[in-house]
Length: 390
Image (cartoon, rainbow, N blue to C red; front, top):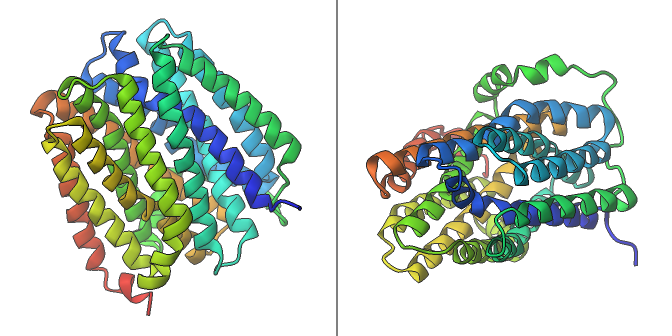
């Protein structure tokens, strides 16, 4: 039986995320070996997003011009190099450079994968396609953090070398099996506009997709804040090991994958896509408010799973809405959306680490929840937002 092209893009995304999932819960522990403060740990995590922020629009334009497959392949080779260089880093500066390069090349993977789904799905099928792309990401996080946690008990460098090798195998798989999805390529390439993504984001906020870009930023900010605050909270307040933190993130991945693969399309069909996005962000904020009150590890794990459910119904829905409502190329629009995501990933870890160190372990969670609620009030006042479902 012939496989759908979507099967191969899902599989490539899944394998890629296993590599990333092996790495990110270990960052605070690994950085501590270099005597990094909480603020520096947050900045290290953000350096990934800084790379994404500046390069996502460029990769999006490149994929509109040259196709999705060559950009995905190039990105995987770059990611493998970045993982390997992170493993052999012997200074904090080297860690920052390697983490930045991971962000640069990962921006190409995720932007092109979302554009690939948009290329070969109808508007009616797109929520299902985007939700299953999100499920592939989440499924990678089922295995990645647990594997990374177990490998780190042997050697903290081993997960990074393993992730590099896995990414190389993924590049070979893409080269051999993934077919190009873009039927009509852009006739010319304007990279200058890609470098001016701050200007593009400004125009995006003023345009018809402005509220959706705000929502994708909020989702990204909350998620990335958690990826720093939870390991710090678990390791330093609840005294949880890196291996157990990895298992908790794997439970989050299982929850997210299940929701996106089996439930999300039914939820959006029942209540609509715009209300689903608002509901998901609201539940994320509630989970964030409750997390610092976790007195036992299993309570933290349950709240992390609740947060993951909320996140799982948020991002694919917003991506679908952006894809449906854009009037530009899918790669270009997804690149701008990725810049808003990256901006959230820049601020989330920086503020998470800084607030944890300066104001106490409650502050990263409560501050993020407050930001989400205030921004949602602004979005809900845009009267056209929910009425689009009618």
